[in-house]
Length: 465
Image: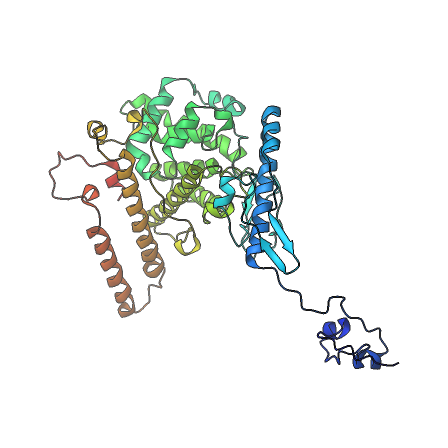
């Protein structure tokens, strides 16, 4: 067979596949010797790889179109027609012969949330067997979902009406004044220790449309009332905490384990603190473990801005901030429980990628729900700062303190008792120095002075430190 000196710039398909040195003739020497068909690609040039900008643009377009489909699905007929009329697909991408060029003009189908959620890596969120979003890390053998319709990480299956009979079975009237009293006691005295519940969102859903709530559920209401009733000066009301707890536990054991959600995490954690407060340490430890494992299952350790395109419950900037608040509340609770019981932590700072929380505006008429010791008259003065900023400042310092507690538990308490004392001395000194620096850096408004007279009131938010 006569060889043609075609002057090919690339090897033939067979030589490329077998990694042989090709003579780049037609046919080539290797194929001729093996008596095999020699084939070259029609385009005798190396394919230019798609740019990162081009790939990102395609990913963003897919995410925005998925979001548009979800909005169309949930819209009324009139709203659906309006959405379809407003859609424009004017030349997102222009593929020219010279390569890929991304057009800067953005389609009106792209939502603001999608613009904020542009990322280079997949989120790791995907639908579980029940259809709810769960998190899979890079080594998970179940990490198979790469796209599709955005889902929601919250669940409304535990609606009020579905479990009303459980509350009635334990002698609880949800319309009774006792529920409001217990709620007020919780937010007045205990809320600074339970920052994994976002007060404004919980109360807004409680007094609003509960069937469409993201941050309210009946077992969460009952568990909060169980904690709040304990603080009631009325002995009869305080004894009702047992009924509140039993009702919340009965509901969440049935619905929470099979339907992981934000409110389920909050309920298990509230029940854990209730049991630890009663002295049932083993049950409290186990309930908190369920809460923290479920939080990891939902991907709380990853910043929510990285999966806006996958989770339709992250509709606003407020939703993102609330999700961060819940994560850091779980993180601090984990350290407090581990410190009290002298046991290893479960949520590690190094494994989390969540940004620190910021202050969100209060909704009107919050005076009833503010922590004890807050001077209402000062808060309404012109030029006064937002009343939630002091609580957020305290919470931020609490987060930093818990990071030191994590370091202390992992570097000191986990060491063998036979370790050399000299080896233990250096980290102990370093930790003591860090604790001192933390204490000295506290703002004056949240510093505690042990020499103050007993008549001086101690704010619950400061006591949390």
